[in-house]
Length: 436
Image 1 (cartoon, rainbow, N blue to C red):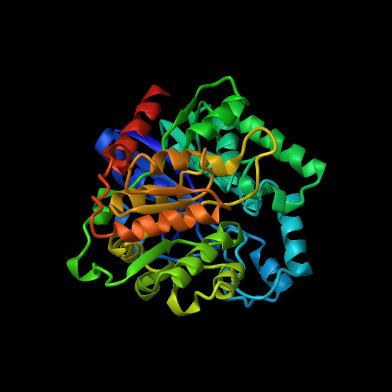
Image 2 (image 1 turned 120 degrees about the vertical axis):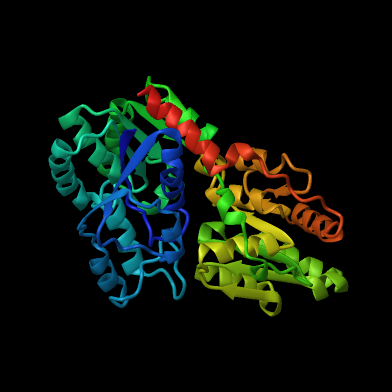
């Protein structure tokens, strides 16, 4: 059996979206003739802990761990956060206002920690892995980012060993949607451009998660860019009956974090207007937000008068989240809003999160708020039970929500597309690894 070394920062007990793509690949790789060896951090600063993911790690695989130093203790001191508190990812702030300390931390993130806050792990990891590989040969290496420091570790190993290297991008690098929030200097921008170019040119295979990302990356390298989307794991949908429930209400459910860019005040206003016009809708409607929420989300919901019908639920284990998705009347898919695209690549259009495919597998109708010409819109609108609305059109939002409400008892369940099964996606991955 061939062996592949996988370099990833996110690994159980990490929760959230970042861990799932490669955890699920690792789960199924042996079925297709590849033995995974995972290299990850010994003491990482994960924003979310979910020990339920341990069940997906195959028995007997090798997991290598080395200590990592991250500047988050300094960051916590800077913003007045307690040592034991977790740093929430995605520029999400659960309370208070963004003051000078937060702005300074974003500037440091963009201009000092290049490409990201795990940069201090690059050299020690290269040294450790090059030494380990002398006694433990493998057939290929994989790096997955963000954090994109993982690609720079793989690059260092490639230079020393010449091993075939597959670089997997779950999100863009230079053109990530929040780049404008980092206030990067020209030096920082150019440094990131240079590092990204080096990875794209030196990796033997480049993999991305969407067509739009492939178009962007293909413009930066002569090597073919492959697409393996995110997906769903069929095992996750074998839900214990006691976890499932059918709401007596018309429930709009969002799972995962809502940062200020995924806060869509027009949506909350549309819901408030429907409640004001339609007493039955007001009686039946409930909004359930499961996960971390930015203070702007709570403020907007309150300002729209939705406090009495909104339930905020903190992070749940993944199995319970799937149960919530399957129990919802409608699932809310909220895409980051970064305004209009001025020129070139526009990251929100390329968004194809793992959550989208879990929503599809859950079988419930989806209400997506995001770019109408984005890739997520293409996938969601392929089922007539779903609705896609732009960020700012309140009347269209009201119409879509009312249609979903009126059809709630007559809609056909979404049919799960097996192309997006994690098993099928792992087969695609191993075809690329074999070609190396």
